Image (cartoon, rainbow, N blue to C red):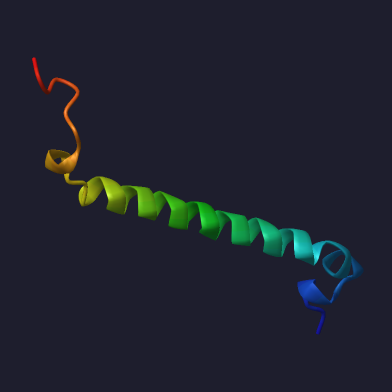
Length: 53
């Protein structure tokens, strides 16, 4: 039975697909880290720009 990953095209370009999938997961991880940072931000610990007015 012929499988798509047995072809010469897969042998030549499969690493590109793997790299693209890796980039997708890396970007998703970055997005989730940003959402986590926003969710657990403590704005009361940041210096206020209006302090001393």
